Length: 199
Image (cartoon, rainbow, N blue to C red; front, side, top):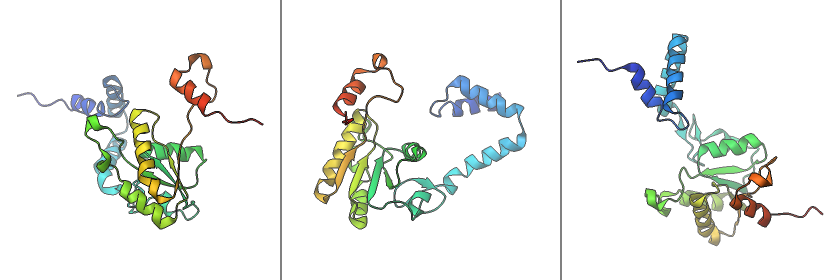
């Protein structure tokens, strides 16, 4: 009986990662084979220990090495504004912008009834508890601008309606440097309805 091919097995596993197809996975595997074995061992060790070393923050749901993530431990952050995001990469995207100094709440999923994700699957009880505990004045919903993201945003607003907190939605519209001619109808419609005064 032939031994399993370790190259094919690793290509198959890497190809399951988002944004990595079979060809990209193959390039990565052959790059590792041609490189320093020490790096490959370090990479394997880091992957093996990933779930033991990284935890979900008990406060906001972000990932980090401790019980509370770096954002939640930062005393310079504003406690009265919470930004709700769908996933941790969305949190990191907002952090890279440098334009938000409040706290976060990560849902880790969006309402998607066809995929079996309903209202009970969203960690909104924890969000309501945080709003009450911190006296939050505004919750910014920064879920994706798609059907699931919009449904989730409306549901978050509905849940928080009785809490006396302002709930806002991130703006959408034309990207910086975008051309009107090549912009889709939904984006252009949102840009027009969300216009603001220049005077």
